[in-house]
Amino acid sequence: MDAHQEELSNPFAMDEDCRNCPALADCREQVVHGYGDAGGEFVFLGESPSAGAEETGVPFTGDAADERIQRILGELGFSRSPPEADDPDVQNVYLTYLTRCRHPERAATDEEVRNCEPFLNAELRMINPHIIVPIGDRVLEELAVEYTTRAPESFDVFEEHATTVRGRGFELVPMIPPAEQTDEQEAAFVEHVKENVFSRDYRQTKGRRSR
Image (cartoon, rainbow, N blue to C red):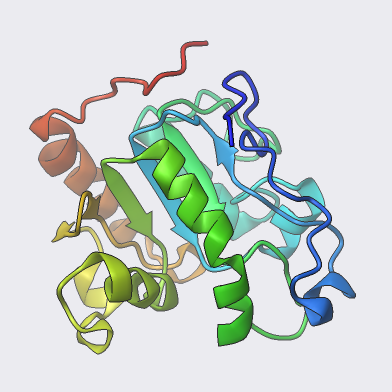
């Protein structure tokens, strides 16, 4: 699987007609695969697309909560677009989800998460990020199983928000879901990354992509 370096949308050319989860395939508008810098050092990982992201086809775009993520990306120097952009101009960061399809009435099942694991695992192998930002408890717990030495139930994203957790091969910087964040929690996350992550040789190296 080769990355299309100049493509931000689905740069790994993953299956956009995937039907591994029939209940999702029958109700989705489109599959929302990853978006961003295929050589980025940072990955922002959410649970599943919002209604806005399903409409735009781009992770973390299309509604007010997603605009908070885009604002954070801008504050950290990862995006050169306004927060409301549907196709943000990002660098050194990749945006993706545990599950790529949205059900309008429920969260993804454990089986649906497992069905999407090959997509996420392939992205992480290809990108080889230094930092993963798990957004929400479910994402943090899923990563804990394979990538940390801690028990999944020991994590609480509200307690771990804006801290650094040691993982296997990379570090995790957990984030409270944007719809549940206060402005103070947003500021704390940005400050932590600027003061404690960028200061340790992660300062905007732009990955392998230059635009």
